[in-house]
Image (cartoon, rainbow, N blue to C red):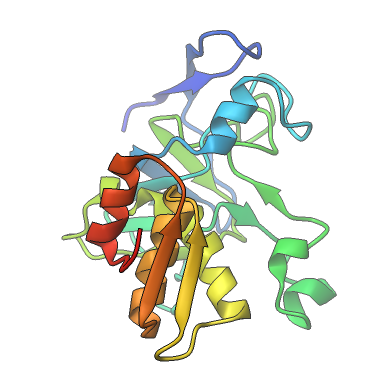
Length: 230
């Protein structure tokens, strides 16, 4: 990777994104520089571009869904399963960074409620070090507290990129109330969240997976993912 890294930047809301160049950052201990292979467009990204998210200030590199290849690591780093990471590994990461020390992180096991939580592509301006804080860029700097998962080289990054957002959100709902084998599941809406819920419902052994609403094309996609009734 060159010393100049390009990124798409929202300078003003409701205006075209500008391409800006950033100097390759010098990493701090535990940080990881990742070359972006694929980045997703979430509904939240559209809201951000329109200026509808009060958490966001410009200029910002948007994009919180990403898959990429490690270019550089400052020090030693392991993924959430304890596997060592190195340059050349394909990875996906948690879009939200938490402190890992507060009661929500350690006792209640609900890091989404961490008072220090921040999110790539949403919380930090690209004027704030390490500048490369979003996925609409040639590279992103992952904070030392970021939870990272090492992927197999055979994984298609374009297919997997939504897993860090709608996939993770859907997985959390199944942690709260997983369906029992033979139960029926009713899903409202065939968007990315709905489709992930279909896949999880099927894996959990739901007997009937019912999807309501949406266009004919979306509903047919739901059937291919395992919906029994649309």
